[in-house]
Length: 190
Image (cartoon, rainbow, N blue to C red; front, top):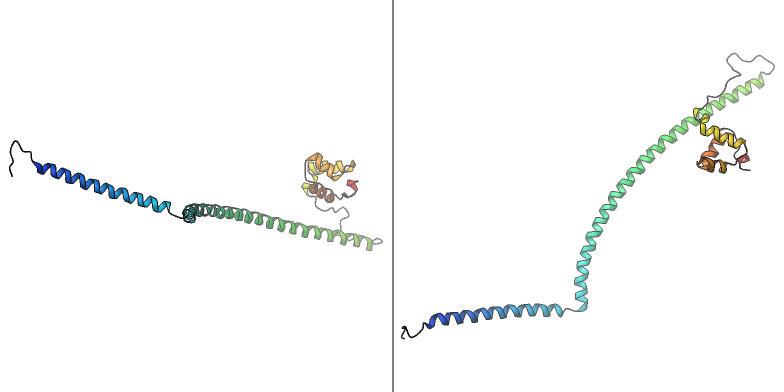
């Protein structure tokens, strides 16, 4: 072989051609793989495609349900805390009410004993320790402005429900005030 100035070097050209052919083969293989994958996806049955979509939405729903459950647990803890607090308050109020009832029963017992002693000793001298002017201790709440207003309205012939509406208070509270002051709530409802 002759190489000279008039004959070009064919080796360089041959190497370039081989590289172009190899690159073309590589690209064709790659394109075929993409086409095959696309066909495989298209060939999935309708149920398989639905399952793929369902799996992704199921995972998403599962994570949302977890978040909701965590929020619900927090809310339950808060509600339980509030209920415990209110139960403690109710227990204190019940204890106070029981103590007050016991004191009222004791006072009522003393009044009954004093009246029976007075009736038994009507011809005799009263005992030294008995006081005819004895009054049960007055509750300062019974003389509050609200109580006075309720009593005055009841004495004016107002019904308990009308008093409650006028004063903007619950009817149960008005009836309780009337019963504490010895006013018959049935007669005030006429």
